[in-house]
Image (cartoon, rainbow over all chains, first blue to last red; front, side, top):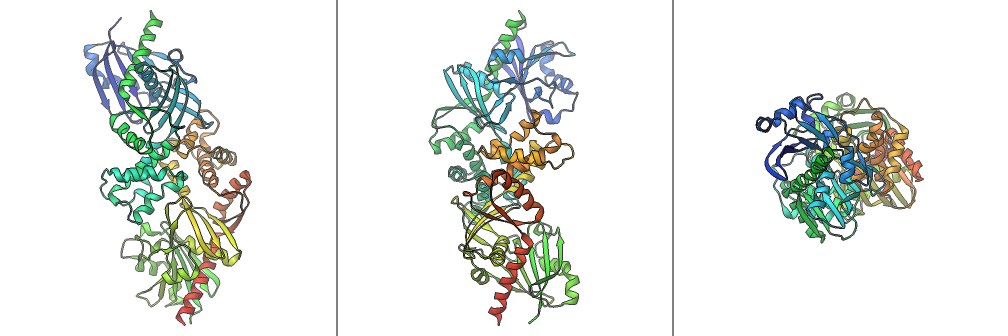
Length: 300
Length: 300
């Protein structure tokens, strides 16, 4: 059994690969080469090209993939594992595919369920981070917030994902800042903590979102926020609005990149929420290590 | 005193002018020639060009303008009249400007105040429709909903505008359908009443907006809405979410274009709200007639 393997998170906008020696990361690749930039039918060739330097040294290295690569728009569509989801149920839904260069590859399924608000909901990739969180920080219960384009709020009991809800915070911020009247004719933007926190505290009053965001225009007209701080204010509104949906004052794990978790932490501090930041890459790698070890058990 | 005059609603995206003979509309012009398509400093020339056919017959016809034409990005910036706003306070804030072709022109101010959710809020143009509503349908109290890019919910007491809140419903629908993942790779869209009503009823469960809209993706994945009906469903979500913010079961006047009020009426019927549709143009004309008569009194 080969000791080297590759862990990959292939999402809509980014490709992130980690060359692993057993459970230790020895190299990584980060490319803005998500699904949107790959033509249908060219996933295998794109992958081979992206990891070429590693393949030269490790020709038939095993590869485990998670994320949107398993969606309708991805390499192969892998059916979602239903809630409650465990490492075992994810392994049962994992599909093995062959590659032209001899690497065995596995694509891990996402998870589908009904959100806390009664809507159908899905995720792809975050289930691996959640699994990793439960391995890194074992506990009877986890409540975790995974911020991003489509933030996830998830509940785990004994390492089993029992519930989750999606919040399109990152995408709404991008839409409003790039394409709406709120972002029109703005000068070069500067990060401003006060404007961000004003956005957070404004969101906490509970105004409906479609009303709330108009304050980015009216506060600018009223001179309460500077033209250069509109993005910071908008970011505060969107994140504050998302945090308002958190159930009660329980401790939450905040899983993501250091820059994004720092932003959420700032908002959480203002609200008085107890957040514990954890590196999202560490969680992803730990989760995929766990799944890969189960795959090897199954194979042996 | 000239019997002919022109009433104009000059907004961000549209230019709408009505040639009036006293209180009777005798012609109208509708052009997609809003502020965004006019270069700074060229408002007078653009206006002269747009109404040229009427100027030939009525060379120095008086002109009364309302809408975003009085904003920072407009012809002249006219300070907002504060709440509570009346016909008299709007007249006090109206500014007279000269034109090179001899027409006297007046720009009516918008209104600013604090929304029911404690945020600063503004409107330009809708105050004239509200005034017209109170003239057309006199009552002690009016609660009115003016749907649009930026919908307004307004309260009037004895014809005085006492409160209002903005909801960016139309703009959010446009952003989500044109620029978000929810609208990506869709076939030609068809209006579908069932999908629209499913959106309305889904919104009524009270999910946070940033979670709610993700259902346009998950219901499509689950086969619950057809790819060709995603826009209808999204429209139902956004309008249902807006209607959820209405205070209680009071009767509301629905002021707008017949096609837009019909859409809101459909949602209101499903929810059991008592809406009375009124033509938005009729309200605008009646309101500006009232203001013009006061301007003439002031002048005489």
